[in-house]
Image (tube, rainbow, N blue to C red):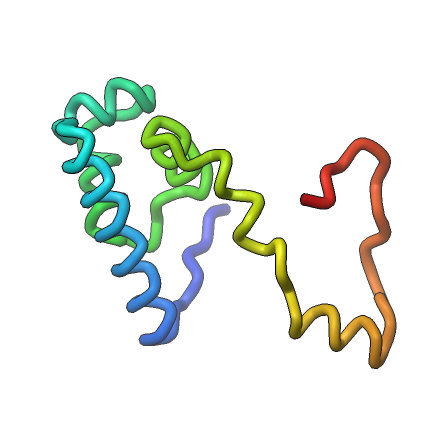
Length: 106
């Protein structure tokens, strides 16, 4: 059973901005939606949904688009700095997940 998260207005705005940037990256590379879709191995309507910021687009679809557009080397930077999480860990310790062997800590 698939569920869709309910997003706040701030989250929707972030999604809109991300989708706009994906579209701009595609256009800068002179790719049509059909060409990007072909390189991603998806239908053109999936690219349309991604570029419109539709909340139902999967994270794997976004990752594939970012890979095709050449952004994978920058993905590790997304959470490289986590000052809020680090402060919480210092204050109250880590309560859940431990580290797993072979998993990158970026």
